[in-house]
Length: 363
Image: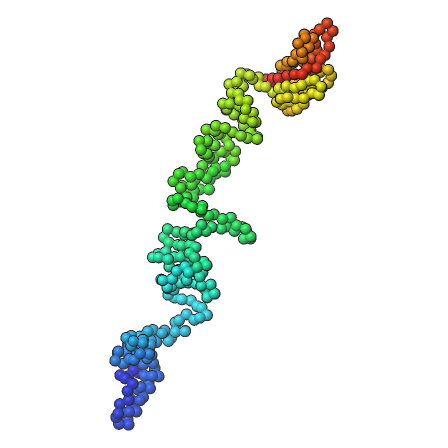
């Protein structure tokens, strides 16, 4: 027990004064150590005190109303975290009143970057003194249209996701529970639930069924513009040319073609320099002789057993300008055929015609 009632040296005999002095010096030497806290009457503001039961060194506060703990004298650095860093065994508490401009947990050379308490159970993250992200019981919320970035293997480039410029209401997109099969598409059920479906895409009133990366069927489509269309079966109502004109119906096509599909047709000028006016699957017309032409197919037919319907024009009002056209069956091949046109007068002779027409059918 090194504490004293007070530090006053009372007038007394020499021996008693000596005892009083020794007690005061012992109290000072031991920081007023005692197994229990000192009584208030023993204390003055600023005096040290060591509780020998807990080994906690204390100092009397400025109002002399109590002690402030300094630390445990049996622990390095009195149990305090040194400036050089160390391990804390208790909670690290930040200032509740901080904000994005001056976050509670920051850096000595970048004080507007760090963490702060935005509100009860809401932690804020600030950069450049501005709230960039918050974390609460609902999850992570990025502010100000910030992005989530995914860097590539060397982080030289990235792929990012971000919110649109403005959203009318909050909504959530929930990821699928499985990765989906090959060729399936990611779809929304209208309530934000995403799932991989067997390739059904709805665009307006048009439904496209996709399988293994290719469209298997399209329904509800009113018009289609395509440069290349590969299909095993096409069901249409009307056909048009490239400019959108010259409409004819599928029924008219059926009547025209019947069960023997048209494989080629051509309308050309057979006089002077031969010139094709219109055609299909005809690459060129060869002018072999007067009244003699060879029709060359763009794509070969499957066999030479096809049929050709042909007609020629009357060049003027005289009967001598009429022509009779016939096909040279010996010159029929899968790539071309030849015809000859002559005028049936007293001296039959071949004749060129201003309009020659061929239509080729194949079973």
